[in-house]
Length: 605
Ligand SMILES: [Zn+2]
Image (cartoon, rainbow, N blue to C red; front, side, top):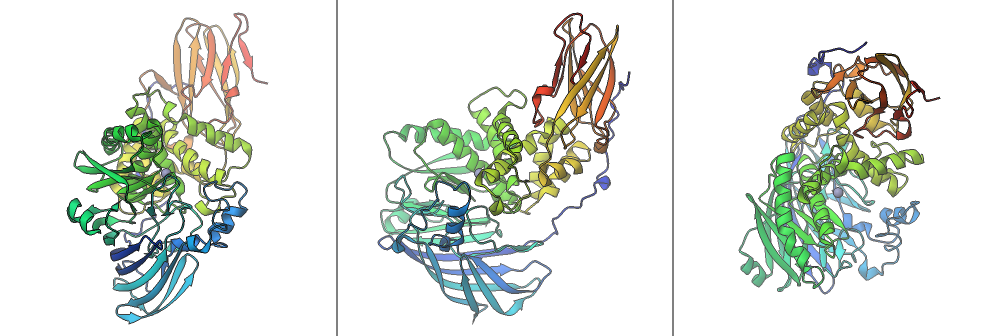
């Protein structure tokens, strides 16, 4: 018998981790003051802005860049061409941009720009403004950008714009000239094709002049009382330490609020006989969700969160979300929980989502699944909350069209490949850690990750490192395989040879990604024995339950692995990964069953 009776796991020191953390210890900071005048007759607005950038990098910057997202909503823009030429167009965009009449285009034109009081040269280049500085912004120095611009709000197509399909007038997201992020990876000047953002944290002081009668909600805390904002049409919001600012305006909004602990929740929706009851039920769910997420991940750090009917589905912004509102209660709560969950990953951790979209959408989907089970009091059976993500990832992997998680969000060959990778495989990445390091270590690792990397733009290595610390296991291989490759997991029972009092079980790794294995053996007398085979390269094992028996480590270089057990009575069946914690792409070979009394040998081939 090759069973060790005691757990030989020894906690490894972090020094054995080969990859180093990415975070360089600095990040840029920026503060915006904006004054915005909205003209609802022309759907245009005028903006004045002072943006104070502190160059905390060790580098001298001789250029600067701003995002001009609204310029994507014009015929022949990169977003338009991409959405008409990709194999599986997003139905929300399709050919809608090329069909827009000119008065419904989006555009944003910078009229004047001073840097530290001096005019500078600037070039509009699609959705990016390229600023040629008169003199470099040296390391540790500040630069003040004073800008005026005019913009036309596009007819609502994707996320932002005028008049969404439910009749909300202004969904103002990705709407102002926003300084591009410069980090240890250099400038991030992605043209706006359709998805994912990266930004600099800072304080926003935004005053919006809207026509009287409009209700305005968004990122930040309203600085005057609601009645005076409504009567004057001047809305001043301040948001501290956020990576973006979004708002929405409509004359028909009903605005309610509710407390979730210390946080004030705001709700904006248009009255509707069909959906009012769902919106009335929403605050209680939203408050309960926030409490759950605070416990699961870490404390929400902002004073308010606004849930606003608008946009074209659901999209997350700091301290706010825009969601479509004509939904069943379950759908309304589901989209709210998903977008609220982004607060922890998109707004506070704020990983570069263009490069590591799975660390935003995937981790958000992971906690959303758990939160929805909690809200609707559904069974928390192991693995079940994430089942649909396992299924969609496995079917994509088997289709041959999977692309690795590390693919840039805009550059997947299909929208489907992006969606499955970012949301489903990203969710599985965390859920599956239950099989690798155990659920307790994974849950601790998630909390530690948030506590350590909030407001620091972590990447995959930082997540891996926190999971290694929490478990004491080496996880280079897990993150390398699951993020950087499309290798898949498939383990099988090859054979069982059963003697009088013992049996030898052989397993085989058929897939190209190694995984530790849980083996469940069921005997005729009703006994069940559970075994666990870790991988050599983990340098230990996850914590086992009292009734689980630790086997010798499996070197991944060996395709097969045998172990011998004592048998209290004849074996009925042997199953790999009975709790379905791993994304094994072929479960048909995971179980070996003896269906007759006399058959005491099982062979797969
Ligand atoms: Zn999302």
